[in-house]
Length: 160
Image (cartoon, rainbow, N blue to C red; front, side, top):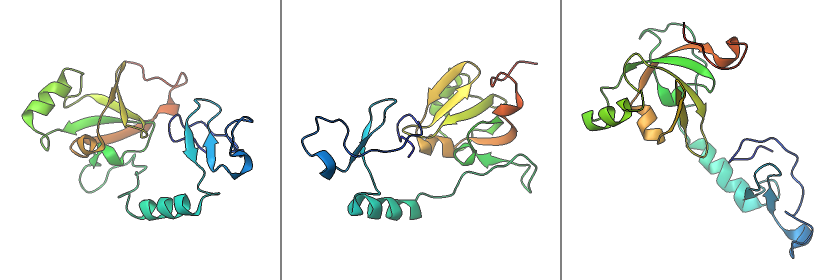
């Protein structure tokens, strides 16, 4: 199982602790890394049903785009896969006031960005700045994907 908060992979066990009064009847699973508690969809029929219903309506899946397409390889930042560097090419879909506020954090046309996290909130890395944004804002940012983060030996982008 993967923790929805910290993305830590772990094997779920029944009950969060040995002192849980519900014992084996408890449907909660606790992340051993961050302590986040959530319902185990494998053990709860209602949670499993909700998870399947939501997965049908979550929208387009991220793309693994690294090559050109008919529109110059341009995609919405929300569709970019994690760990792929991209260059911002268009911010015209957002209000000028929002574009100005984001520009203070280094997010402007020509900026090199990387989507480093999707949940619980999307996090965008711009240089040394990590910025949490709403998913709707990511839809307004057009980027051209570049290379994967793992292309760099240290895992961090270097200025050239």
